[in-house]
Amino acid sequence: MKRAKCIEAIYPELQDKLVVTIMGACAQELYDLGHCENFFYLQHAMGLASSIGLGLALNLPQEKVVVLDGDGSVLMNLGTLTTIARYNPPNLVHIIFDNGSLLSTGGFASHTTSGITDLAAIARGAGVQNVAAVSTPMDFIAAAADAFENDGYSVIVAKVEATGPDHFGMDLKLPENAFRFERYIKERKQMRTKLHN
Ligand SMILES: Cc1ncc(C[n+]2csc(CCOP(=O)(O)OP(=O)(O)O)c2C)c(N)n1
Image (cartoon, rainbow, N blue to C red):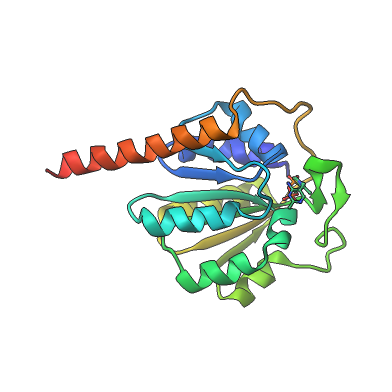
């Protein structure tokens, strides 16, 4: 299973959600499908996409937040699973693409490569109630649909090949992406307030 194909499969579903990605290959694959103002590609701060996702989910309970994460990134910030499990935001979907590799920086093996470290088991141990471990496109699509539809913090660990895009480069620097993402959130809030008045 390829991560790019997984992202492509859920891309239509991402249009009305706040999406935070890790840097590198994963960000590039989403960006290449077409940037949307509700996408934030976290550069540099490896491991913290899920922490940003938690902050967004807790502060914007009316929004569904989707984090596209990587095994290397989660391993760098393992405490994130315990923190999110404790606060248990019902509107956060955490997709961990486990390619067993630090692909974006040259493809070094991560701790999951040998099959010793099981991120889904760690998520369960952290206290996450909804954990799916998938390795086929059909199972991925079903798990994602389920997580998007239902309330509850969900973790999907998707085993994918260690392959990425053949190019890197976005016409969107981090500060511009951050300002526009913030503006998008504010505008949606204002729109909601208007609709309710
Ligand atoms: C603190 C820190 N260490 C190292 C890096 C360099 N770095 C950027 S992406 C990356 C690999 C990320 O691996 P993973 O989350 O598995 O995603 P993949 O690249 O495999 O898609 C590394 C090591 C960084 N940005 N920050």
